[in-house]
Length: 241
Image (tube, rainbow, N blue to C red):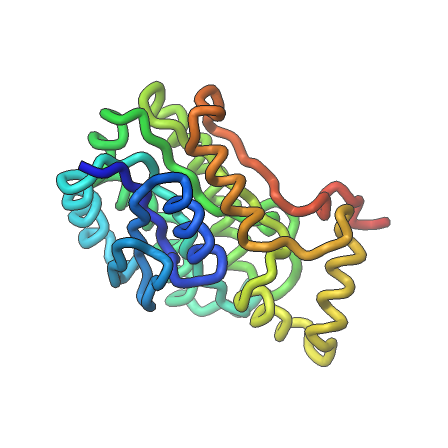
């Protein structure tokens, strides 16, 4: 039975790189997405809003693989602010961004515990300090950090639970998000992000994948309930500066 890591949102920029890194680390990469996950060893199409299906899938994967980790990377980001976000968008965001990982864990929990596995969620710096126009997304990422702390207590000592909170990462989703800045061009917005980042660059998907690799590996065996910020130092800057 091969050791495997499950990656949700495996078709996106970060998800694809996560699958590559898990394969390089010697795991079978099981990708879950609504779109083709071309870098995964196993490509599963799943509606992450369907919690019953996710529980059943967790049970099925636990029977077929030795699960080392669940990496919850999938997320939706409605472009709307507080008071303007439709209820349906709120519900979809919370189901996909937060509840999905708990449902998947529900089915896979016993197998993860048997192999001293871990859960890593991909949060965001927007869970701590955000901008206007993405109320549901920012709320869901803050909720994920709360879930990590609670789950670390509930699942210890046999399952570790941690988060990675990326800053600006060069993906299609980042570029799509520039639309909320109106007439400011993508190139102009990228330059602002670069200048306000201590390391003077936009992050790459492999920066996130490396952090996840560390958190699920043996070098992090005494790390749980933690959030590893991977933002190039962007949130070290005082917002009013």
